[in-house]
Image 1 (cartoon, rainbow, N blue to C red):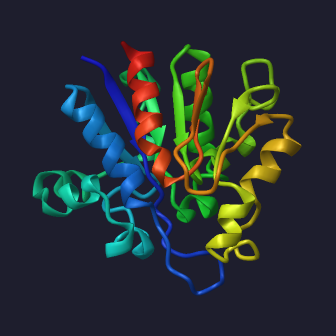
Image 2: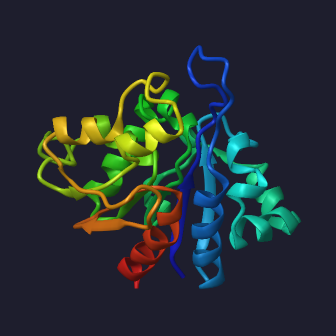
Image 3: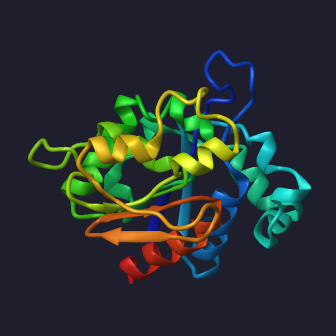
Length: 226
């Protein structure tokens, strides 16, 4: 039985913009169900513990998917989500992999979290896969490999595109653009059409471009753990 750690944001505000945010429901629900339906143990954590904020834009009818509809009726999983562990209380040794769902919220807490940074680097140092979808690849901004280089340098990666950020009209709100950051760090960043499913695996690193890519990321991670 494999154990996977999910790390979600605790932040519900987009900086000083007055806009509400959090994690994106689809990016949590689809991977959660793919892994738990296959018999994997999934543990949830967030910087503050307890209920992580759901991005209100991800909880609308037009953002709904089969997985989000399942989650809406799933009281058991809602209860699990309401009781995430504090990130500082989890240990890499207890898990086989880590997965970060996206949503804009993490740009203001998990990207700069030293606890999260050390956790991811510990997974890498112990030859365990780390996976991210949509905005979550932003967290790789400060992550280093075992030799002290940027983890993404020379790696095939993807993440929320400049075009997608422009489409949601948040280019001037976010602290940085993921596509630009990846290229500045020397990553081999690639993308396909806006909102199309796209995910990449390079060694221990798995990344997905947008909400529609969450299933692909989960399946790559599951295959990696077999």
